[in-house]
Each structure stands twice: as C-alpha cells, then as structure tokens.
Amino acid sequence: MAIVPASIVTRNMADFAKQTGNVYKSVSVISKRANQISVKLKEELNSKLAEFATTVDNLEEVFENREQIEISKYYERLPKPTNLAVEEFLEGKVYVRTPDDETEITSF
Image (tube, rainbow, N blue to C red; front, side):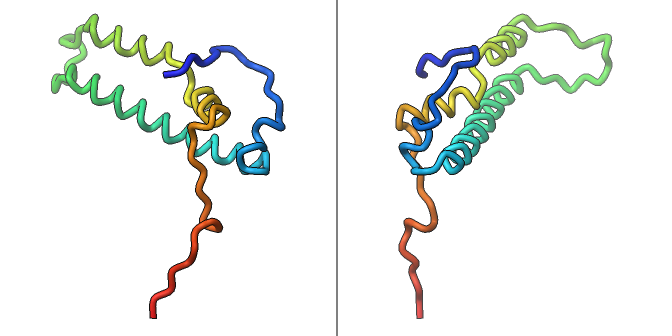
C-alpha cells in the first residue's frame, strides 16, 4: 500500500483531468473507486471481527477482547478510502473504462 497523506493536501485540478480529459469524470471515477475500497475494507474488518462474535445476548456476559480492540484500532488508523482512491488515480493505478469506448455487439 502506498504512503497516503493523512491530512488535507492541495491538489492541482489539471492533474485530475489528465487521465480522463474531464475533471468531473475524474471525480466520478475516484468516487466509485473509493466506494470499492470502502466495501473491501468493511468486508475485511467484518470477517476478522466475526471470529470474535458471540451468541450471548446478555450484556453482563459480554467482555472486551484485546485482539478485537486492536483490530478495530488498526482499521481506524488506515487512510480514508477517498484518500486512497485519489492517490491510486493520480498514480495511474485506476483503469477507467466507459461504455462509449466499447464497441456495441448486435446479434441478429
């Protein structure tokens, strides 16, 4: 994983338009990529926390698990999905495909 700045960084808008030719299209692509990253991270976190799941409904019997807390803290410290998506986009790691670019296949 690339090093992603945790704080706000001033960006040149022309850098966003280079890959797609349109700033708004680039922002849309970054947004969709950020959603993909967010879903992936959430699935990873849920799968790791599922190992600690209990079927006990009584609050008195619920206890804190040190490993569970550490896993949660690790995911909280990760860069936000939007920051990751912006870095991936600017580094050219995001593949952009639009339906207009694809040839339409017609069957008879």
